Image 1 (spheres, rainbow, N blue to C red):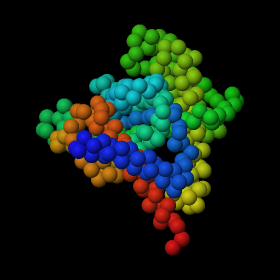
Image 2: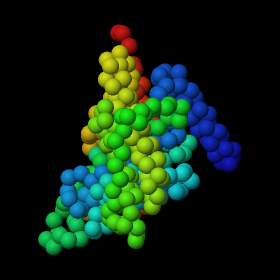
Image 3: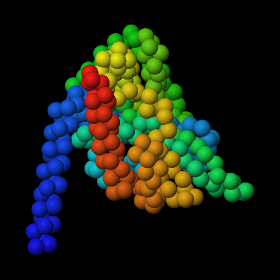
Image 4: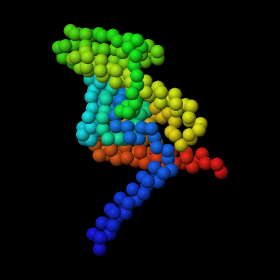
Length: 291
């Protein structure tokens, strides 16, 4: 009897999940990027100096481990490392099934609270790291005119081997009409860095168009989530208490080591966030209906 009951529970759970997904598709307008498989993931150290840079490196390693577990393709487009082994800024070009839908809610401010190794007094320091997730839909082509681009080359800086400071392999591309500028020095070959920089520039230009349209439609489509989340604190990592607090779900997790390895605990949190996001959209949609 227990085996039959357990088998029924699995079946009912699967059926309920399918029904839930159908309800979501019926009630909510489908997002423009729900099926987007390619993204630009950016990590930038914020407030906190070298400690923020070290934690940016921790998040970089977490996302890379997660991508490897998922067997997704990714390329490190830029990685500006600090002298202590941290990361000032880095970006990854990621390709995987539903990549944007899976990782979009990682965008925002990640706060870390821990005692730095250089802190002799044992005082807790608070630092921040910003994560951005930009969609790169394959069916959208951003046209770039040669006359609108300023392309500069320079010698690569930082760790990277003997080629550093010996060849002008690093590339900086500026889109003159908007002033948006990107750099890439991840490859030894200049033309490869130029290709990657162009991809990054297209992602940033596409993001610019997204938010331009979003600002015009926000009052008409209340079911669409706003763009303020990127500037808000979304998660706190407290090393002293071995606690990860996600402020959107109002939950606390433990086992920092496993979480920062991009393991099952991290993936389960992503699944919970997607469900929370759907429920938030449903509430906004219901609230927008005439009473």
